[in-house]
Each structure stands twice: as structure tokens, then as C-alpha cells.
Image 1 (cartoon, rainbow, N blue to C red):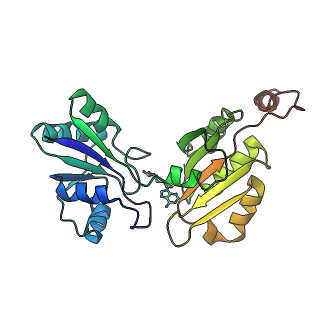
Image 2 (image 1 turned 45 degrees about the horizontal axis):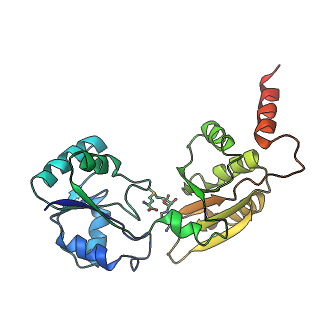
Image 3 (image 1 turned 90 degrees about the vertical axis):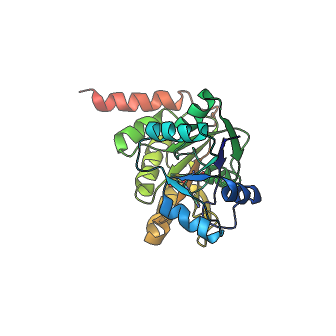
Length: 249
Ligand code: SAM
């Protein structure tokens, strides 16, 4: 019977593909991929001749509808993204939801995910954490977003791109204070893998000391809020007061 497989692929090192992922990619009728050129290279490396189905020419809802038709006609389909686990800041949500509605079986094939890979080497508490994906691109929206997280006690996990790493860290320093403990996991599983754990102002100096350090893929993690018994006002109230002060004539 037809079914949809959600298949994780590597986040860098091609050795990080599971035996089950290889089996599934070999045997499905179609491999639905975010970028067929990129995924073509992975399949070629694994010596798999699969029929690739491009997802990027349609919007998510259209794609889901088209794939549901194929699944209903009896085809088995594997969904992969460019890297890591599909749906984790990657396409697939509409498709999985539509499969539930159409009562089509969905089988997960777990594997690499940058957030989890980074978290477990961060040295920050892992018992509870918030996965926050990408921060807003514009500084005003980013600061507003970060401000709501000031008192979040859980470890915060963000994805970040080369273009915005400095700006985001500057905003983090502004909102959380320059001593906020940050862990940056960069280029995980690749040749230039680096895991660096510093207060945010020192991390900014480390990154600006050498521009090459700002290149690559990043997971950014912040230590959760710990209440200081000496604080009379909570930090959200302090931020609010500071902003009011700016707005008032
Ligand atoms: N689905 C992927 C996953 O399971 O992690 C995430 C896809 S998201 C579009 C891409 C972002 O993930 C990058 O901008 C970066 O923040 C993070 N990322 C992916 N691979 C990474 C790696 N090898 N090292 C560090 N971060 C990585």
C-alpha cells in the first residue's frame, strides 16, 4: 500500500545517512525533493537511481494536493529536504497534514537535525528547550521577538545565516545584556566544525576578529533565564521601562 516516508538526510557529512533511509530511497516510486539538483547529488553519491519530483515549482498547498493524488493512486513517496530533517524549517507541513486527512500512512525515517545535534554538545540544559527556528530578518521585529523571550527559563535554540549572525548577536546583547551565555555551533559535521561557548560580547569579538569565522551555517543557543534573587524588578519590566523612556517626550 502507498505511504509517505519523511526521510532525514545529512546536514553536512554524507556518512550521516541511515541504513533505513538508503533502503527507503532505493525502493520508493518517487523522491519528492526541495531542490532536485542538490538531492540528485546525494542520491548519486549513494548510488541510488530514484525518480525525483521537484517541490520548488509549486506553492506548498499545491504540492501537497498533487502528491496526495499520487499517493492515492498507489505510489509510495519519500520526502527529503536539502539537509537534515524535513519540516524542521523545511517544507512538508501541508503534505503531512493532508496525509492525515486523507488517511494515508506516514512513516518517519529519523536522522540528522542541526538543532538537536547542536543542543547535545552545547553544555546548556537539554531537559527542556525551545526550538525557535530563524529570528525575524529585520532588526525592529527581531528585538521585539527577543524581548518576549527575556524570561524564558528553557534553553533557546535558533538557526542563523551567515548574513545575519553579527546583527542577531548584537540584538541579543542589547536585549539580554552583554554577559548572556551563548553557544554557537557552526558547520556541524563538516571540516570547519566549531562549537564555541562565550558571553555574547566575547562571541561578537571572536567573530569580528576574523571574517572567515562569520561564514557557514550556524545554530545559536542561549542559556535560559535564571532569576537573580537580588533583582527587584524583573528584566521584562526593566526593558519595558527603558522603551517607554525612549518613547516619552
Ligand atoms: N531541516 C534542517 C535540519 O533538520 O536541521 C534545517 C534546514 S534550515 C533551512 C537550514 C539551517 O539549519 C541553516 O541556516 C543553519 O542554521 C542550520 N544548519 C543546517 N545544517 C547545519 C550545520 N551543518 N551546522 C550548523 N547549522 C546547520
